[in-house]
Picture 1: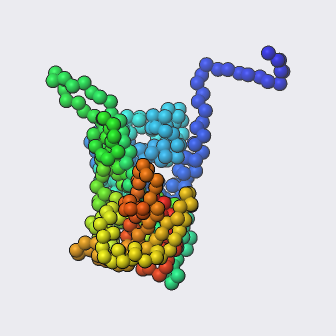
Picture 2: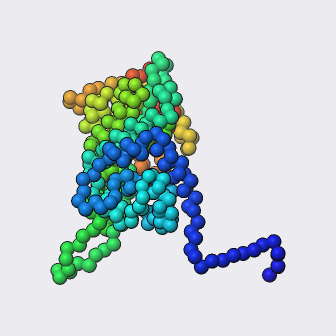
Picture 3: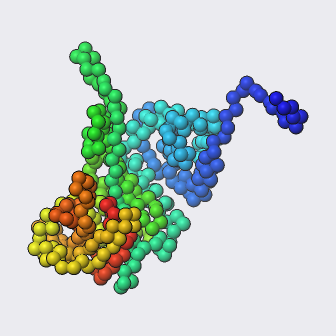
Length: 378
């Protein structure tokens, strides 16, 4: 030990937890919500009819969820462990008195119904979409005829949850799993006991704003979730005094069937999506196009692989569905033994089919090929 008279160490048996590093961000957020009147709107307009509610209101639990989102903690359990020593100060930021227990929050979330959730979503859209943005600053892309398009990305992801095995015995009561309320068997459940939950998100690609997020059990209801995403996109554009024709919705192959395409066209938006099937490659019109030189060639950024693009023209994919523009991309097939994860391998080529409703003037082939990368996922 090296003695140093300038250092003095004091200890105490009393626990004094350190203030969480994210607490300052919660202070800023709460003050912003109060100043803008959003906190008062949440307190008076978000209602939930629930028996034995006690002394708590929905705003108490919304405050917890705001703090959890700002904290970056991995789990609610870890968040409560950090916030509990400062519970009174934390709730005072939101003009509330008592910090609910985490079990109380769990029961509240289990009781949230659709009307309560939709009111909160509408308030989020009303106050969150336009905050700090104007019609000029939200971005966009322009074609050669100065037509503006705002790109929105709609994508669904699936997450598997593992469930432990339960004993099977006639003398035991039937098992009850807590995940049954939110998960169901799905495509990514590859291991025994795994169940899946699907989440669909809508993102404004220029400002990186979250337009909406929608979830469902198992593989979800992609048509209903797409309808909700389109409603959120339409609301976003209306707040900036823009029409639905300005929207360019970018989707993956899950939405590349005629049902989803008809749903998008009926909403009045433009779309770019990967086709789910490849039967359109057999169409005589597409065969004639593929027999000629490609419309354009682009190079993928990551692999330097050259991709040829063909403008297949306007086709009706099914009876009763409006015509859409077909873009075919092809590149050389990989070496024998390598699996083709995206596209259809025919001979020495791998073909990918994209569907759009944009008016083509060289804009889609040049600009969209660059912005969408044609790199295996839209």
